[in-house]
Length: 216
Image (cartoon, rainbow, N blue to C red; front, side, top):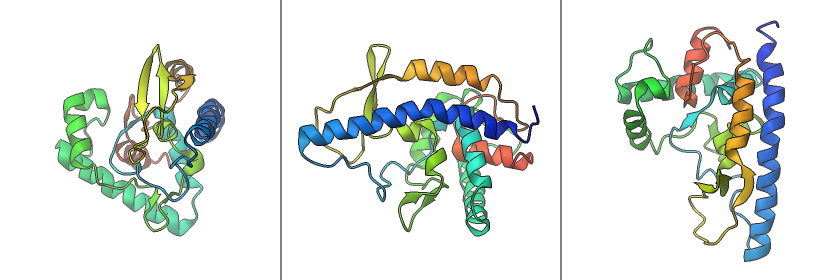
């Protein structure tokens, strides 16, 4: 397969899987609104969960790489600058240079979590802080799609509840996230793009690595 076409074809399949989350989340919003009589707070213009770094998968990074390439020129330049700045701040907190591994496993969970806490107020590079909207919403990572609900996870619950919704007793979304992750992981085996991190990392660190290798 032509490596220049691979991310797009790979992303098409990834998005089909992630649509399952979107459909379940929309149904969850309707259940919440029916049970509480109030609108679910996750709506365009709310960016309560768009601050602070977090770990994303390799497939998430490829979605965002394509999103960057599709932005109009001025916006793309602004987003690229924000990615570089965010990556530099994260490397500074982690005491990494530009050539060091950026994967969570290499950094260590304790150091990674400490960095995320230290930069909890930093906006996502894809957040338009004026409109409080995501400029890559259609290609947003899986963790962003999970935000605002509790999800089934092997008989347990993965709590991604909305940080500003204090209403209790919301139903758990029935989609098993682990099963979906397994299917995404099988798809990721095919993802061979120069500079793509070998494991989970942040949006900024992963995209900065990809873009500096010329993948963008």
